Each structure stands twice: as structure tokens, then as C-alpha cells.
Length: 251
Image (tube, rainbow, N blue to C red; front, side, top):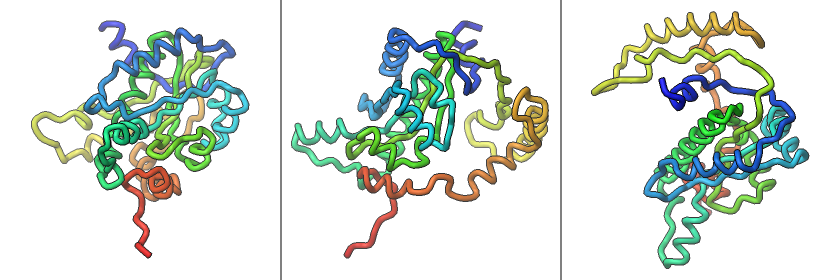
């Protein structure tokens, strides 16, 4: 196993950090690694905003649902899907920008962000830094947009805490490979695999070193996705001229 594979397979979400800062050199190398990552048509439909100011990190921690690790991490990165540069390019070239009417634009932007985020995680962890992704950046997206002064055609998708780990956490067990990797065609009979994974996941929750509890994976995800988790996403998409928001009737 080479060092890259070892880093990838050793990932853990870190939510406690020392006071040691992330150096400018480390942050530059993380961003440069992200810029080298794959993206759709070389459109690079993402932007990363770094927040280091303590007061601003505290404000973002509150907007994300009072997640203290955002405030405590030396660097908090916000990954945005971004078509603002594309809008400028369209203006420069005198061509129409039609992303509002094309739902695939939302998929492309989210995919570019996902690849960028994953690359940043691997780059940071290869230096011995710890990370945790923050979906809560969408909890109060309107306030985040105002705080970061995001223009139209830019939406916050995910955050990422980066810092020097101050904890040694257990690694969460993942689904069986057969549940996520298929050959030639999709295999529909997944219930036995999920039942088996429930047993593994339940044991992990009961035996882990902190926040141990009783539960199953199917119980958690089914409850989580039983209703919209973050309200106002439709309004955010409409406000930022992204596809996917609810259409208001014409007056």
C-alpha cells in the first residue's frame, strides 16, 4: 500500500484542533492541489473562500448550527458552486448564459465542488492535518451568502474545517464494498447487505470512545431523509439564479 492509498483509507473526521496554525505554505499547497483536480470541460465551476478571522468563524459556526469546531479550527474553507466567472465570460463574448434553465448546471457545479472538497481533504490529511466537512453551511444559506458577499450565480455547498488534530477518533465502518461497487449493471438486492451493515454499525456506535449510543445505519439515514433537512434551499437557488428552485407563478 503506497502513501496515497494509506492516507485515503485512514480518513477520519476531526472535530477538535490544537492552537497550532495552518501555515500559508500548507494552505497554498492544498489550494494548488484542488486546482489540479478534474472538473467538467475545464470550466472550474467552484470557488473556495478561506475564513481565518475568529469573529467571522464564530459567526459561521452559529449559522451552521452552533458547530464549535468551525470556530476552533485555524482555517474554515467554504466551497461554492460558481458560475459567476462564466457569466463574466458570457458577457465578454456576447453569448447568453442559460444555466437558470438547465438543471444539469446544478449537477455540474455540485460535482465540481465535491471533487474539489475531496481533493482538499486528501491534500490536508497527507500533511498530517485533520479535517471535517460541514454540510451545515447550507442551514442558513441566505445569511452565509450575505456574510461572504456572494454574487449571483454562486451558492455555498459545503464547508471544511482544517487544523492540527487534538483527538484520536475511531474510524467509522463503511458499507460493504458489494453495496457500493457493482460490475456491468446495478445489483438491486441490497437488503441483506444493509442488514449485515446495521449489525456492524450498531456495534461501532455502542463501542466507540465518545458519543456512544444505540442505533442503526438504516434507521439514521431513513429518518434523516424523511423530510427536508435545510429549509430555504429553493429560495437560495432562485435568489442566486440557479436551476432547481421552485418556480413562482407568472403574475
